[in-house]
Image (tube, rainbow, N blue to C red; front, side, top):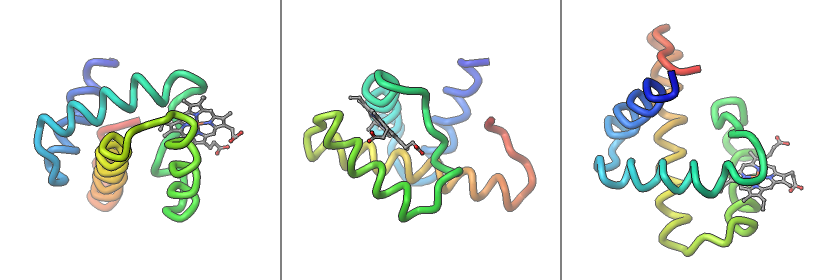
Length: 95
Ligand code: HEC
């Protein structure tokens, strides 16, 4: 189940314009850094301005370098984009 999610997330993020290497690195950052204090919040449940506000605060809390922050931001945006596509086509592959 968990592995399926990883594979689907990587496939979708790759489709959204990140290289496979960036997707893997972005996902690793997210899992290692953002899961430390709380559960994973679903990006698609937040309007974009609210998410950007939270992410800005969390990047400070997580003490990411500017490069890590950029990669993580793009990785998470790719997840939002893939959720939007799934919603439009009615074929939601992710929880
Ligand atoms: C040092 C602990 C810590 C880390 C690391 C952390 N968070 Fe948080 N997060 C919190 C706390 C505490 C809150 C509750 C709001 C507050 O006090 O700022 C929160 C709240 C949030 C919220 C808002 C939840 C709501 O109420 O809707 C989101 C979204 C979020 N975090 C995402 C992230 C992401 C993405 C990362 C990785 C970049 C991350 N967090 C890393 C501690 C952390």
